[in-house]
Image 1 (tube, rainbow, N blue to C red):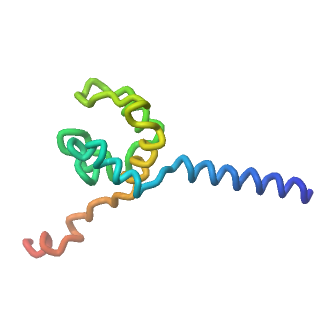
Image 2: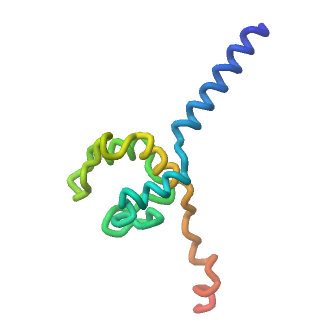
Image 3: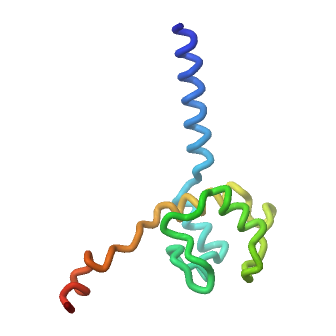
Length: 115
Protein backbone atom coordinates (compact mmCIF):
# COMPACT_ATOMS: atom_id res chain seq x y z
CA UNK A 1 0.00 0.00 0.00
CA UNK A 2 2.83 2.36 0.88
CA UNK A 3 4.42 1.67 -2.52
CA UNK A 4 1.14 2.58 -4.26
CA UNK A 5 1.00 5.94 -2.45
CA UNK A 6 4.60 6.66 -3.42
CA UNK A 7 3.86 5.90 -7.06
CA UNK A 8 0.68 8.02 -7.02
CA UNK A 9 2.56 10.87 -5.34
CA UNK A 10 5.30 10.72 -7.97
CA UNK A 11 2.73 10.74 -10.76
CA UNK A 12 0.93 13.73 -9.27
CA UNK A 13 4.18 15.62 -8.84
CA UNK A 14 5.32 14.91 -12.40
CA UNK A 15 1.90 15.90 -13.73
CA UNK A 16 2.04 19.16 -11.79
CA UNK A 17 5.51 19.90 -13.12
CA UNK A 18 4.37 19.16 -16.67
CA UNK A 19 1.39 21.52 -16.31
CA UNK A 20 3.61 24.23 -14.86
CA UNK A 21 6.05 23.79 -17.74
CA UNK A 22 3.27 23.98 -20.31
CA UNK A 23 1.68 27.01 -18.67
CA UNK A 24 4.51 29.26 -19.78
CA UNK A 25 6.36 32.20 -18.31
CA UNK A 26 4.18 35.32 -18.22
CA UNK A 27 7.09 37.72 -17.75
CA UNK A 28 8.84 36.35 -20.83
CA UNK A 29 5.49 36.29 -22.65
CA UNK A 30 5.06 40.02 -22.09
CA UNK A 31 8.49 40.67 -23.61
CA UNK A 32 7.73 38.39 -26.56
CA UNK A 33 4.34 40.09 -27.05
CA UNK A 34 6.19 43.33 -27.77
CA UNK A 35 9.15 41.76 -29.60
CA UNK A 36 6.91 39.86 -32.02
CA UNK A 37 4.71 42.98 -32.55
CA UNK A 38 1.52 41.27 -31.35
CA UNK A 39 0.66 44.52 -29.55
CA UNK A 40 0.42 46.39 -32.85
CA UNK A 41 -2.89 44.67 -33.64
CA UNK A 42 -4.07 43.28 -30.30
CA UNK A 43 -2.94 46.11 -28.02
CA UNK A 44 -0.33 46.00 -25.28
CA UNK A 45 -2.86 44.43 -22.93
CA UNK A 46 -4.55 42.14 -25.44
CA UNK A 47 -7.77 44.17 -25.38
CA UNK A 48 -7.84 44.42 -29.16
CA UNK A 49 -7.60 47.08 -31.81
CA UNK A 50 -7.09 46.10 -35.43
CA UNK A 51 -6.89 42.52 -34.15
CA UNK A 52 -9.35 40.66 -31.96
CA UNK A 53 -9.59 41.01 -28.19
CA UNK A 54 -7.55 38.26 -26.54
CA UNK A 55 -7.62 39.26 -22.89
CA UNK A 56 -8.79 38.95 -20.26
CA UNK A 57 -9.68 35.28 -20.24
CA UNK A 58 -7.98 34.18 -23.46
CA UNK A 59 -9.10 31.10 -25.35
CA UNK A 60 -7.59 27.77 -24.26
CA UNK A 61 -3.87 27.48 -24.95
CA UNK A 62 -4.27 24.75 -27.59
CA UNK A 63 -6.76 26.93 -29.47
CA UNK A 64 -4.48 29.96 -29.20
CA UNK A 65 -1.53 28.07 -30.66
CA UNK A 66 -3.67 26.47 -33.38
CA UNK A 67 -5.09 29.86 -34.40
CA UNK A 68 -1.63 31.46 -34.61
CA UNK A 69 -0.50 28.56 -36.79
CA UNK A 70 -3.62 28.55 -38.99
CA UNK A 71 -5.55 31.83 -38.65
CA UNK A 72 -8.95 32.32 -40.16
CA UNK A 73 -9.14 34.55 -43.19
CA UNK A 74 -9.07 37.53 -40.88
CA UNK A 75 -5.99 39.22 -42.21
CA UNK A 76 -3.74 37.89 -39.45
CA UNK A 77 -0.53 36.44 -40.87
CA UNK A 78 0.37 32.82 -40.30
CA UNK A 79 3.24 32.23 -37.87
CA UNK A 80 4.99 28.87 -38.23
CA UNK A 81 6.83 27.16 -35.40
CA UNK A 82 10.07 28.29 -37.04
CA UNK A 83 9.00 31.93 -36.65
CA UNK A 84 7.43 31.68 -33.17
CA UNK A 85 8.07 28.40 -31.32
CA UNK A 86 5.28 26.79 -29.27
CA UNK A 87 7.22 27.57 -26.09
CA UNK A 88 7.07 31.30 -26.93
CA UNK A 89 3.35 31.06 -27.65
CA UNK A 90 2.82 29.35 -24.28
CA UNK A 91 4.65 32.24 -22.64
CA UNK A 92 2.50 34.79 -24.50
CA UNK A 93 -0.64 32.89 -23.50
CA UNK A 94 0.54 32.93 -19.89
CA UNK A 95 1.00 36.71 -20.17
CA UNK A 96 -2.54 37.14 -21.55
CA UNK A 97 -3.82 35.21 -18.54
CA UNK A 98 -2.27 37.75 -16.16
CA UNK A 99 -4.30 40.63 -17.59
CA UNK A 100 -7.18 41.46 -15.26
CA UNK A 101 -10.68 42.25 -16.37
CA UNK A 102 -11.57 45.92 -16.61
CA UNK A 103 -13.50 47.26 -13.63
CA UNK A 104 -17.23 47.48 -13.99
CA UNK A 105 -18.69 50.96 -14.56
CA UNK A 106 -20.25 50.96 -11.07
CA UNK A 107 -16.75 50.56 -9.59
CA UNK A 108 -15.36 53.70 -11.30
CA UNK A 109 -16.00 56.70 -9.01
CA UNK A 110 -15.83 59.30 -11.78
CA UNK A 111 -18.53 57.57 -13.78
CA UNK A 112 -20.76 57.30 -10.72
CA UNK A 113 -20.36 61.01 -9.93
CA UNK A 114 -21.94 61.90 -13.29
CA UNK A 115 -25.32 60.48 -12.34
